[in-house]
Length: 210
Ligand SMILES: N[C@@H](CCC(=O)N[C@@H](CS)C(=O)NCC(=O)O)C(=O)O
Image 1 (tube, rainbow, N blue to C red):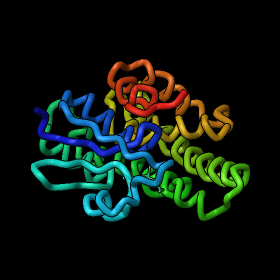
Image 2 (tube, helix red, strand yellow):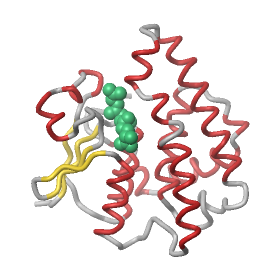
Image 3 (spheres, protein in one colour):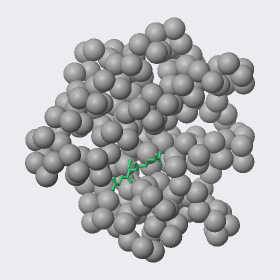
Image 4 (cartoon, rainbow, N blue to C red):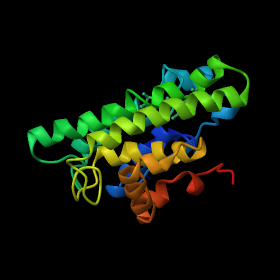
């Protein structure tokens, strides 16, 4: 019996970040699907666990932790195998800067609840999401000019990539012009081929739709 349970949604980019970290660190976990389209994230039983009514949420020893980056930080300290942050202090801060560009400055503005509030019209929602994803990833593309290697920060998969790949997946969903994002697209294509990333990807999750 695994010690961890992850509450997540197949197409949630924040959930993919955590699933991929669990795969990379080879940590077994139980999976509980929370269907965002059925608004299960707002169910009072779920919001007892995750007060903001968002996924993902990790259960460990009867305690609950939400916020994907807090979960990643906890996993990194609790399970130090396959480190996902560089050893050097400055480099770690630079990776967290990249994380912020996506986790703080991009994903929240294109999240489902924001799109729902913006409009009930799917086309208007898509224009909004495309604009902010594009803007966020253009900033990311500039930010990695000096650090890019196989991955966003040299040759090591870091938290930055855990955030980037699901965000690029959303960029494709909303038809963002990837020609302006050659590094992001190359890292995305490379990572999708990794078994750990694929295992954590939306199409391999319970409840996934074609
Ligand atoms: N800052 C949070 C954001 C979580 C979040 O926005 N999750 C999305 C899916 S990626 C969600 O649950 N959306 C449901 C909604 O907007 O109602 C994190 O990093 O975990």
